[in-house]
Image (tube, rainbow, N blue to C red; front, side):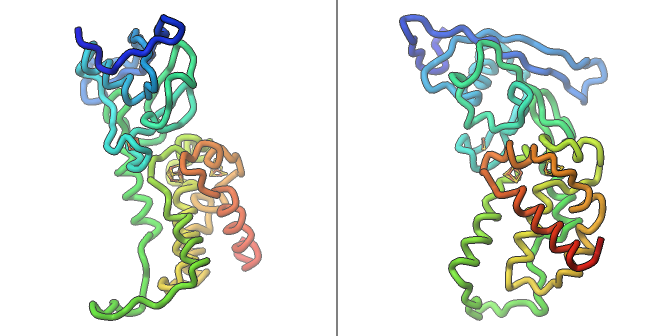
Length: 252
Ligand code: SF4
Ligand code: F3S
Ligand code: FES
């Protein structure tokens, strides 16, 4: 058999890995969730993306998982890696033990094995939080955009780096207990639109969207979101800022 990826033995011997995957196909009534072990040889620079593709190509073509960009940009490959949410395409096997356990992200609808429907959750949250610019009038097609201070543009850009991977939701205890909690990603988006001078909504308008226990007051400061965000967004600072702002407005 032709190796899927060039093997590069360390000290003469490549490491033998066991990839333990939580398997389940909710579309099949006879499917029972179970762990399945796959043995592979580690290769130099191997990521979980490469490992999973090797398993699918050589051992089980029914294995379900998602990848698009392989570069930490699209957010589709997030999964639980040894119990911690992370991006499979940015995770090197050499940073993990001989046995690697993979499971789908919790909270999101399971499609099958490691594939979850983050898009459905993200769309629902975006609609609920109205994460688009609210302007008083439609911009004219030939109009130049208002100039924005570079420091402010930079601040907005920083929050816009979210790739909607869902790791912050999967790493949040509140999101697992409270079905409609908007989580760090939702609060981060509100923080982003609050900053944007093109958005004419007032603080009271934003309060209407997140000033309850499914919003900023549901957050119990568990900080898991901040710890697992692969883009290192300042989630904790954002949430603390919004909570303080709303408390100062006398809204809680
Ligand atoms: Fe992923 Fe971070 Fe965005 Fe959450 S805030 S969805 S962890 S990139
Ligand atoms: Fe959850 Fe992050 Fe708050 S983990 S409880 S959203 S600080
Ligand atoms: Fe796009 Fe991993 S495949 S972030």
